[in-house]
Structures are given as C-alpha cells and as structure tokens.
Length: 99
Image (cartoon, rainbow, N blue to C red; front, side):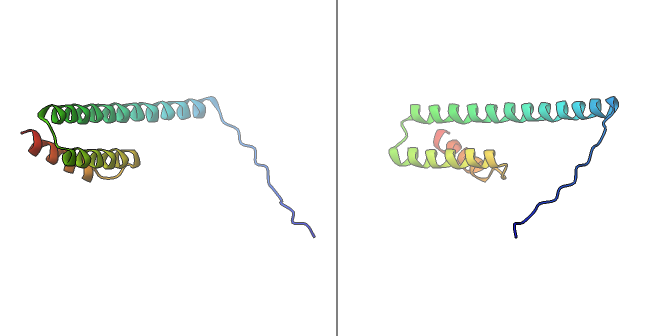
C-alpha cells in the first residue's frame, strides 16, 4: 500500500487593522536590523583602522598572524550573535601593540 498524506486546509481572514499592525511590526524589526548593521559597520571600521595603525607601526609577521586570527574570530562571533570574547581580546592586543 502506498502512504497517503491527508492535509487540512484552514482559511483565515485578516482585517485591515490586523494587516496594518503586522506591517508596522515588520517595519520596527527592519529598523532594528538596520541599526544593528550600522553598529556592526562602525565596529568593523574601527577594527580596520586599528589594523592599519598596527601596520604603520611595523608589526612583525607573528603579530600579523595573531591579528588576522583575532579578526576572523571576532567577525564570526558578531555574525553568529555570540558574546564578543575575541573582540575584547583583539582590542586588548591592539591597545598593547599601539600604545
């Protein structure tokens, strides 16, 4: 015997006020996402500026490798929404290196 799938169709009606409410909540979520992206962009620019400063100082290849590793880890944490452990390590490393 062949397996059969039985589905139930449920129709719902949405009035105009409910639809407006959904649109408004969607707009709020997209605004929040936009501000999160702005923050991420600002942090990335700060990291890149710090990296350029480090290169100007004459960072050794070993330091460059560590910087790259910390940058990758920090970016991965930001993308996954994890706590910024590597970002903090990167900040400490750059602070010691530059200043």
